[in-house]
View 1: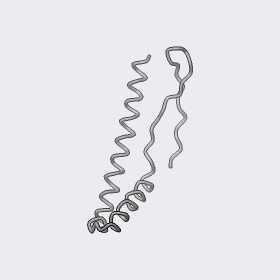
View 2: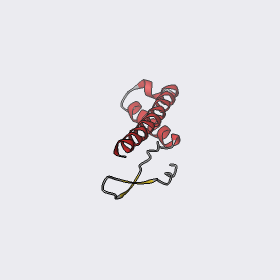
View 3: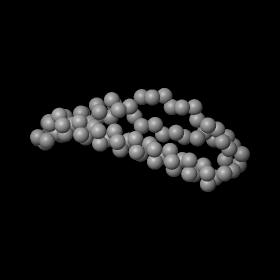
Length: 86
């Protein structure tokens, strides 16, 4: 997992210092392992499609895309809220 960047400090309305949150997606290898684990469990329960390596790779690629988009969206929302509070 990558180390988070040093958060910038800014003050809230009451003048208290707050740290800005930066969302970072998990490392792709971690997401790939998760996808493999999910597909392995589904294959054990009888899902033949989940034993196909192309399905596992596609699922991992999909999840990696989703976590990157989610982190980007959360960071965008965080910046938007910061602008509103200033």
